[in-house]
Image (cartoon, rainbow, N blue to C red; front, side, top):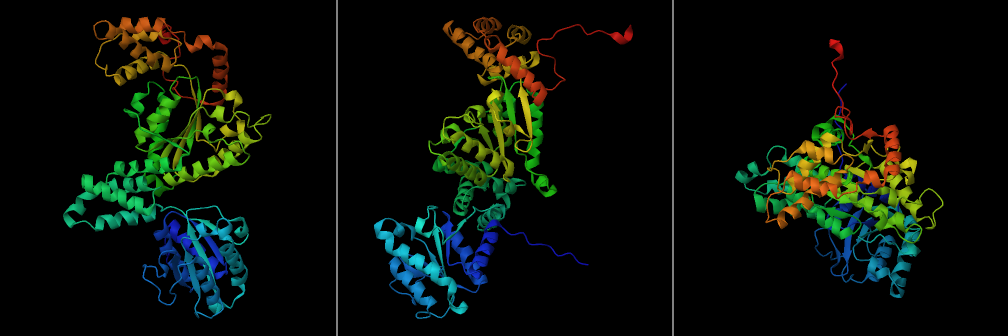
Length: 537
């Protein structure tokens, strides 16, 4: 028995097959939401041919044309929308043509608005009621291509809506190959070094076909190679355009900029390999993300920023509070739009900072008319069902206001508790802070500094360095010393003292419900003792 290889279809090809099925099922009115007019029209032409329909294309400037833009002389003087809709009706009645036709209308939605849009809207409704019943050999269908998803209420019951997907990896690969094949042979051989091709394809996922082609061309012009970093930077425009997410530039140093948290950092390094082509071929699912719960100022947000740098992917901040709307349903709509952009972007790190504040009031008793409940429902649904390659890092300082269903397995891969830094980690935070301020070469007593900052958060320790720098600068711009850092530490009332009860409660929860961000192999926090040689006794 011979096995037959199954052809893998791109998302565009699958959606084109859906259009073919809709045409064969005699759906009269299809509304396609997309910004990629030219790309989608090519798929519509394929879908029409598969269903034995002849495609016609219309816009207010050129009238009725063929796919390549040439005038269709059989339908002259059809620039007016009313005229082309009359032509569709005539084609169905066999008075102007004797062929099955798909009429792709590009500019129609603007003509369906207000009082002036009453006539074309009524004409469309009449067509939607009439076309399914005409004879098979004169069947006609209308396809509206538009970036606008707002369908007139009068047509809502008649149209089939398709939200056309952006190019997937298969289509992006074809765009990249086309760019490479257009190069002279000597340049082409060096334009995509080993490993670059897959990385460039991953970087371009989330762009339109035209945007991807432009990025590849720009990279080739600037560097004579396909540089994934150049391609990935184009995604910033997508984020700015949609206005539902914030783009954050990567921080220097990656995970090395985070002092301590060795257990968490090791886990994150291992998860990076799960995005590789080898892991994809193995069938390994993409990691979903991690929840970082713990004491404020101990490195949770810094870790989110650092992992994006370490993985070489965009960092997007999702501010759920900023997406809230005063109307029930509005918040959910804004959040779903943000999730749609995230899925389109492809591989990225999504940072949800202080998620407990955005979710406050979502579990009942809220006075916001259900807005928080809308947000929670949208977040839970997306985190459970999503299939993209976005890695979510959610941080929380107060778990008492978090709904328990948010932290159950399936939403995140794991939950980590981030405690106050221990002695070893405090040294690491000092070293990272000194390096960040260009002082990695100076000599300080890390043991003395660690002892003096027992009970400090990582943020409190890191802030001692710029405080010491101010003192050194005022003293004839000399280099800072251990004494400067110790003097700065004496002026701090650490959070562990001012919020001791709250921290104790948070630690109790973390020990019972989460993995420690610091491994048990490192020394206990604040513990000292003799190393007894019991076996020799």
